[in-house]
Image 1: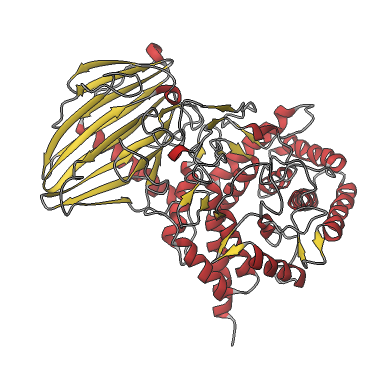
Image 2 (image 1 turned 180 degrees about the vertical axis):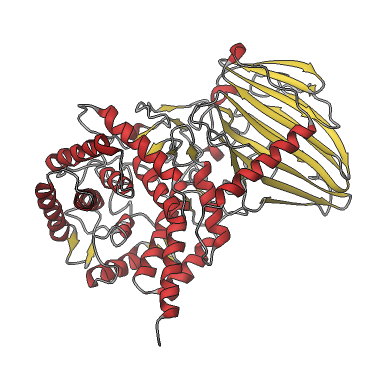
Length: 621
């Protein structure tokens, strides 16, 4: 494998406990198992030599006139890479059958199916796993010409094949010291012929049940089961708007990024992908942020998916209950099982994507103070009439009582800056949301609570934001008190109900953002030069903010501008409708991929724009 594919040159498959990226070249270059946040088996996207990969592709690189296309089977997470050459047409379908069990599984199956529909095509298979982010050696056992086992510390990978191919041990010496511990195959398929491989990861070791034999009939059954799952799940969607395909793809992406045993959504499937090529802004996003998860669940609720919301609320209540007498009832992020320990380490042996170092596993930002999470948590809990019965309400009311004593503190803010704490306006905004939602629930459902005090604090926060978060010189709400720097996170102000989307103060804020943070409809989070964040380098425009900008424009009645910005933003999606975190200066996707923030904001923007367009079209005159 030579070099690195573009970040955008990938589709994602998953089984709701793990996820893998497959490039347009037919290479699985990212897969962590048995959980999203486990060490990787394949991570060549972070080091093309040491990371490991599995390539199954038609060998068309040297065939003149050959083309390759990648797509999802409609309304599914089945990824199809098609090869069209003068001598034949074929494809490789990649998928994992979703596992909705509440019990975490130690075993996960990644299925790859090659077939030719016309003529004939040569195919190549190379399987080079590298355990524990490429740090741990493994041993290879060839069981027969259709099966092999790669044995690493605590984890094994079974490779099984079916159809007209024969597995053999690689005879080439590798550059990473794992000489001849890999498996390869070369084969040709004729029209209507099928070959398949299944990669089964197992962390149970010898205690686990034997891996069942592989047959082509079994592969077809798995394919049908995967397709049926996604079609059944999508029946709950009530979206009937103008952007059905993109909204559906975003919903599937959010579902793929949700850990089924606990209902905890993760922020992205990857770690270490840079916000600037060669820069140091390379974080691990395979965890559950209270903020991101709450907003993801809100997007799914708005589409009609309620089971995901209930599962996340249960997970969130368990975090509150587990906090006990901790100084902070919640921290900003957790592992998918609720473990709060996310020690950050640098994987110095990996060169990073296109040389972008350091590669970090874990996330030291878990220890930051970000007060906005209490507002997002309250908003997520407020979307249900019952938040866990009497016990659940008491936990929530106790959280608000605690927040009433502790809200007025500087913090690191939504963007996890490492340049020191400030009185961030967005943090205060979401503090207001926490009390507002608590008061509404207590009143609507006759729940006990110190509503009088909550109301007083809510109003105090409101006055503080208006007095100190507003810049008379800029005629805009600003990033933190005592500055004139703008911040795109405040695009959420109208959505959470703090201000009318057509209030003059909000419209002037929107105008100020357009002049300073918007570049051809793409939106920067803030200006690091004006507000140092403690990190070197720059970053691209932030996709979350670009879609929040569309939503704000729509709700402000600027429909022509909003629709133009939305349609233009959709052109930055990759070939299968996925977005990373940011858009770089040349239109390239940057950061971890795919990013839940981006897809949840796309859904919200589409719904808001649909609503406002319908309202405008139905209005007389």
